[in-house]
Image 1: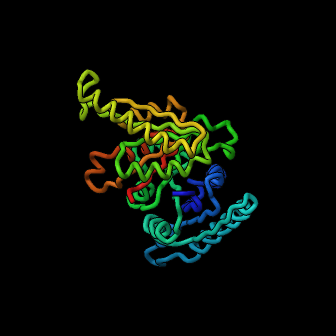
Image 2 (image 1 turned 135 degrees about the horizontal axis):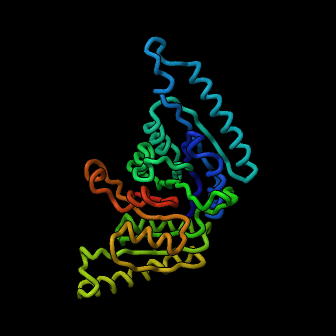
Image 3 (image 1 turned 60 degrees about the horizontal axis):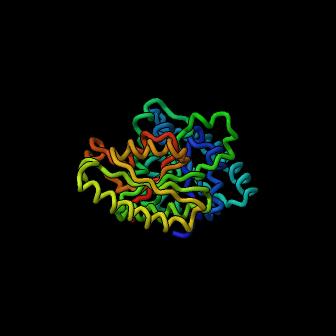
Length: 294
């Protein structure tokens, strides 16, 4: 993947505002030229009355409010050299967003919240999780950071320090290409692989030594591939529980975003077992960018 030219940005305004859009402008260095916005008026909000049915007056008012905001965003983005378009739809938010992703031709989808709800400290919101599970386009889940409160939030570069986690799978290789595409907008990249002692044995085991040597070689190969996109790339090999190690390294390196691949698991396996990528989305205090399998 050469560049990130277009972003698809669904919003309800109070969740992802123009502040997040401004933070995404760092991707201009990686080729960003266009953002497509979508506001979905939840049909349940405008068709709750069993006697009148669909409330056209309320729907029209919400549509006009959305269009007014988008026109303002469009004007401000034009001043930054970014082309913008928008749509306002009435329907099921999850279905309309997934349809919009398919039709947009975007390179990246942005979802999530600026302001965290209590439950989302543990579980990702239903619509955001649906996007992560079903999107065939990379999805960046925005997460609020406590230490950003007193900064000039508009100028924060969410992509300044990238933490790229790999398990050397085909899915991770697709994610590596996307991580490389982000490079021009970043200053450094931290590349990591976590050895699972359940599979390799303890650190005193011969299997662990062999797995470590193999992983170090694989990390170095990928470090060299990323070196052409970043001014600085550091490799980190650790052992333990995957999610815990990734989040520990996120703090240690002060990474501003985590990038990793996702297989998009569904159903009971996802509900009960989870996946490393989805758990990182739920627990990370910085944005997580998930790249699906091709």
